[in-house]
Length: 370
Image (cartoon, rainbow, N blue to C red):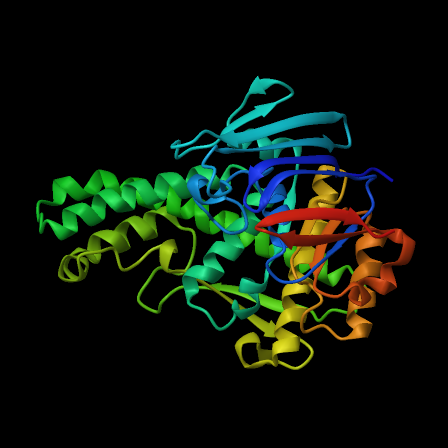
């Protein structure tokens, strides 16, 4: 079975870890320890092996261990289906951006997405169906980016054009000539955003339909406010933006477009909206989507993605926990999972490595349990 795995992770002055080394063999890892010991910090470091700010969306300054203020560094060996790669990423003190090197050569963050796929599920996402639409858009865009790396380019271009248009709106500029070019850019990139998101939803639907799993199937849809265009039609969006200028001028911002989209989910077996489901059902729906995303990526990439599952056992009963571990192992995914109690991972047995993280005097320590 072809695997994608981090076989060596080294941290230097990263969060609570002054120095840490974890070596893996491709199996899942169960990391236990009390709250605040530094378990999630390990997963956050792994999430920075992909483009972006990682699972906490933290600034580079926040990642550095205090009070030393020496900057931080992550070094990893990634075993990919085609070959192994050495990845280094770090930030110097006072530097707001991070540097990436792949196999000793400087590389843009986007290059990380071409050699690895990393998905994560964190406790903050447990309230996804109860939060505002912006959190669900971010969740969907992360899935979309995993399946279509160029989605980030469309998102950045759309946001840039929208910021410039919003500046005109706030300054009460009324000359149509100032808006036409920006609205054309928003329409072009906005149509690409919508199309990419719909592609991702189609892939998730197919991955759910084709799997036998203990986790519930979610019926997913992408919606816009009633006064906005309904789909990824560039001309329609351009015309809608032009027609919306008077209302947007009054509001001082762009009120229509894919930046207003929302992701809705229905618990298929019950015909119930996700926001109305129990806490356990909402968590099970999230796990179902992460697993579907992983299956879709495995088809494209030739290996299952690396999964970062923080406190994943919370709100899952023993049966679903065991089913989750079985699916991870059957998929051949290297999952890094955290929890406060080692008993939560008993069903994994020798299929995983088991580590304990403790904290003393603000310093995290890692030991192998078995």
